[in-house]
Length: 130
Image 1: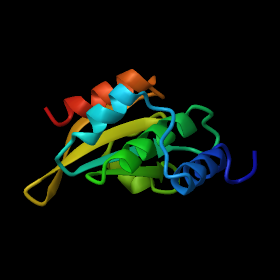
Image 2: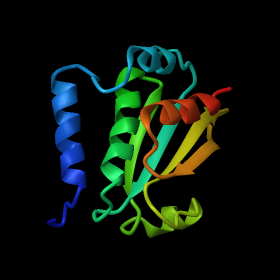
Image 3: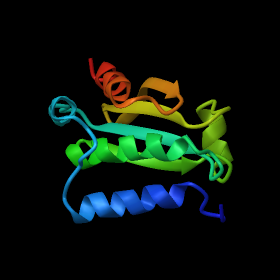
Image 4: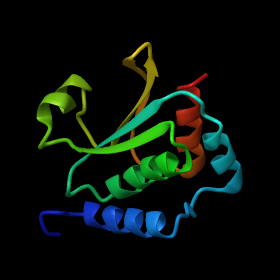
């Protein structure tokens, strides 16, 4: 892989999803659950270009963000942004951190390492707003 590594595929997937105005890979049930989140949420996925599992984790975060304007999905290259990676204790990727905005501050409400299957990903996101 070139310098963009595996993440170039994620960029293309996102462009296609946005241009088609569709989020197709989540089940209707999960789309409905995510669309009901009424708090500002940030899903940060730490990645490296050589990680083959990272694109799936990033795409899940971006799909959640496409479903609900309260959700922001972010991909952070862990090596390039080493200070923030250190702050979040990132030691392996993909590392997902879920934060909810409370009184103008982002508060970490959950995190997990690995590319979770769809239902598990949605479960982690929902736990953050309980």
